[in-house]
Image (tube, rainbow, N blue to C red; front, top):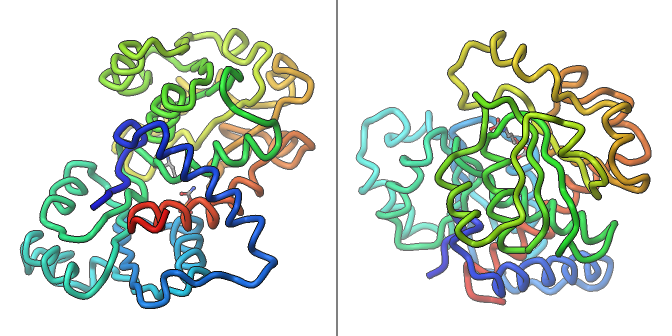
Length: 303
Ligand code: CP
Ligand code: NVA
């Protein structure tokens, strides 16, 4: 059984297989669709709101011929503390073939996954967002060719997206430069892991240094769904890390801009960049569908 929880836990060759298969899925979309998952059910559990993750997984499963059940935790016994995680996971294992879960706390996600008898996919926790970064890899390669040895710059919060990006920099072998205030550096464990794998990772306070001659500039909201922080204090710290036209000029001329969305326009990114020629944000969201298909098929051993 294969779970998709973190990018560092999947082998390099399987990650490449998932990306290549997603590219193929995208090419085949206009042709007669293959429906390998005709008798399969995906159960989606979302503890926090979602637009892209929920809809792209639903579309992916339906395009593969399967079906989807969406469980709002507040409407289940489990969600209101009326049934144990263990019992809920055992029951869902009888009803479905695969689970997609978005939880606030990564440790709750892991606890749930331990009791489940079917594969589970991480649809975002406070720690990581692997499905998003897989779509970003696909998007980058669609626009700029192989990502290996390219330079990606991350500006802003060292959050869950940054965590998965760091893992991907090792697994897909690209250069990663992160600019953030020292109080908001990414998870120390994952930085150590990346360094132990001889990653090409740079962490700096200087946004210009990070962006200089990069092929892609990425950022994310300054306040994440799971953040329980002083928001104004955090915003103040992150102000110098906004992605605007001026900072984009330090990147390569043909560099792209990526953002997982939702964005807080005017905060971490200006309208000019979001809506500008270099922006790849809409393609990133579209590619989620094809990457989700590929991840589901990988978990269920169809690829
Ligand atoms: N990028 C992303 O995961 O978006 P949603 O929160 O809308 O799912
Ligand atoms: N860092 C953001 C990502 C949303 C897709 C959050 O966790 O809210």
